[in-house]
Every structure is written in structure tokens, then in C-alpha cells.
Image (cartoon, rainbow, N blue to C red; front, side, top):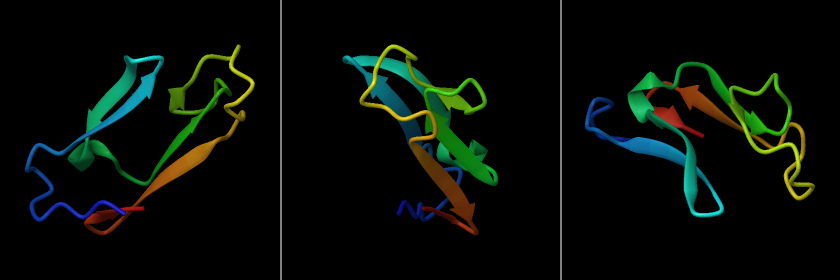
Length: 68
């Protein structure tokens, strides 16, 4: 869980793949759910060629000030 003391504090969320940043956003910009996976329906899509990442791999959820 990520709980920034100030949502505008500059906390960044990054998705790395093979030492490269695929996606990045501020914690304050996450509203509702942020789905991560190989599916094109995911907000943060990972490479479709990597079988270790499922099509709907993970979800980050905003719960008030927390990101779970």
C-alpha cells in the first residue's frame, strides 16, 4: 500500500520491464483502478511476448489517499 502524506508530493509510480520504464504517472493521477497486464484493455500494457506476465496481471486501486 502506498499512502503519501500529501497526494501532490511528487510520488511517482513506474512500471519497469527489462530495465526500461514502460509507464509512469504520479500517484495523484491514479483515480479508481490501474490495471497492469498483457491485454490491450489494461491501462498499463506490458509486452504481449512475455508469458510470465498474465493478460490481467495486477490492479492498483485508489482508496481515499491510499493506493493498494
